[in-house]
Length: 153
Image 1 (cartoon, rainbow, N blue to C red):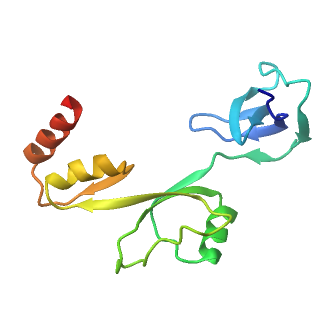
Image 2: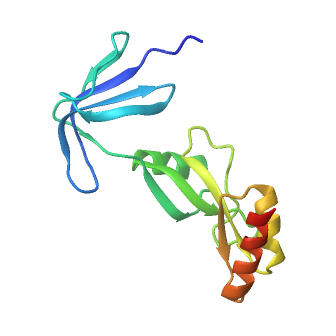
């Protein structure tokens, strides 16, 4: 299998959670970061397309954990501000409206669902939901029992 040539961002400063990494290299292959770190420690592949980003900052994608997005303009605004993933409600009639899943380009969308009854935990697991919000009416015992039964099966 032939891999696409890597894209390399070289010389910028990676903004990190604990400290920044100056004179850094970020290697991207097939749309995913495969290596990042100080230039002296990260080998640049021979086939790479290198972009000199000296003097610039490299910031990880931001996540909006409670978002709404119902237009292409909103999707564009998120991306412009560095938001690459959103967690939003896809419930019809919700305060923010339905999520526009057809926006291109768009941040990655992770819909959330509100679980009101204990058996809905099982339904969410079967659907493959990534994010669920447990309604305040669920007791810890109900949630633990459901999650335990899911792990056992």
